[in-house]
Image (cartoon, rainbow, N blue to C red; front, side, top):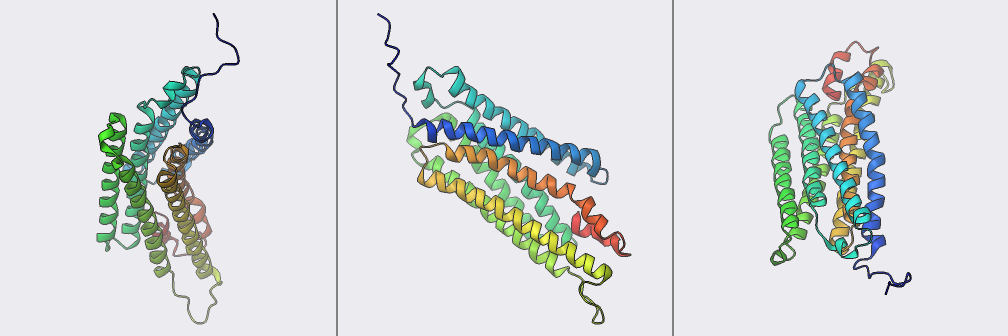
Length: 292
């Protein structure tokens, strides 16, 4: 006898807050991935000519990581919501795509932190070494922890208890602290490099005013990026701590990856526009120190 059309299989999870959130995270991630592609194309077409090969390779690798991250998210949503749309028990399966995305996110974040550590090193005339080295060290530790978390999730070993969740909190905490340290350091360094205005000139006079305005914009941009990435990391941590059974944190993780990459490539693409603001300044040669 055929089953009644009104009989539906019991879904073992709360769909709106799990795979519903995962689906909407994919939509937001798709939008941001389009922004990533646009910024990367603009970088290689208009802004990469004076950059060293290492910087170009970093941007290319970031794009590849974001492409793989986005592809994995599509695969995950397709597996759970399309392939197994009539198989609710499959919603409890752990497939490889989401855990691998944890590692890919960490790879993108560590590259971004490396670039900002390099900026700190350059802005201090290559005199301050301990801080950039420390940032790189903790970024690598964070990367290692993230891949350990991915491995634990893939193994699905129940004997691990809350260890994967604990390590996830640690990695997000380290990322947030590094963002704060980078934003604070760059803000202080830029402020110290502000040129002293002669007593007989106002701060808005000619080249002095343009330089001062440029530094103010760089400081504002640095603080804005630091606040955005830090808040995202803390929000993801919040949902892991207080709502780990849902997948809201996974959706936000997809968004977080793209935000890190967009913040870096947008910064690289803004250098020409910032340089043009100081073009009338005879001392414009020193601008690369600010925008490199």
